[in-house]
Length: 102
Image (cartoon, rainbow, N blue to C red; front, side):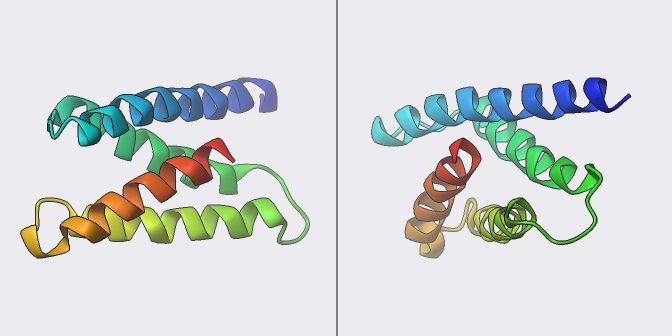
């Protein structure tokens, strides 16, 4: 069972990374494509969240990284679509991609 869950978690992560690279390219080209943005954000959120479902006896560095990633993603989702928060949105979405790759 853990093998299937691990595969699911890895596939989510790879989807998030791939969509994240497309998302960053679109940012650099000043394009907004909601499909890629949504796929990137929500698969990355799901990756971070599912990481907490693996068995562990204590808090590990992976848990801390997951918490940081979820906090950054929450800020990105909050900043999305708000003109005053544009810089925050760009920084947090790119940081979330880095954390997902890390």
